[in-house]
Image 1 (tube, rainbow, N blue to C red):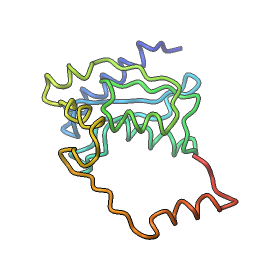
Image 2 (tube, helix red, strand yellow; image 1 turned 180 degrees about the horizontal axis):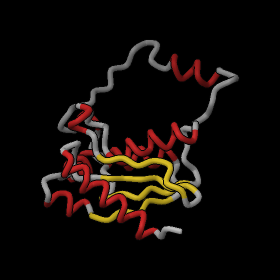
Image 3 (tube, helix red, strand yellow; image 1 turned 135 degrees about the vertical axis):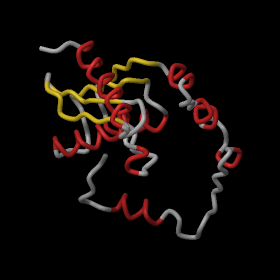
Length: 157
C-alpha cells in the first residue's frame, strides 16, 4: 500500500513530466480514494488554452467523472504545490477530505507563479479590486434564486 509520501512523489513526478513533455506548467495532482488513484493530471492551461485547467481542477473533474458524482467526499488530493485560490475554491466545492502538497505558494512565486495579488484582492470590496466588479441591480435579479428555492426536486450541492 502506498503512503502519503508515495502519492505526493507521484504528483511531483507528474509535474516534472508535464514540463518535460511541454504539455503545460510545473504542476501535477492526483486524487486517491480508498488507496486507489482515481484521477491524475498535470497542468493543462497552455495546451487547452484554458486558464482554469490547473492540475488540481483537472484532477477534480476527472475524479468526479470516474465516481459519477460532483462531490469527492472520502477522497484525498495530492498536489505538487500549495493550491492557488481558484483551486482552493474547487477543493472546497468538491468536498475533498484532505490535501497534501509539496511546494509552498512562496516556492511557486519564486518560479514566476505568484498568486499573492489574488489573495490580496479577495478581502477588498468588489468595486475596489483591480478588475472592478460592479453590482448592477435589476428589477428581477432575484428571480433565479426564487425559482430555485421553490423547486421541489432540486439537487442541493
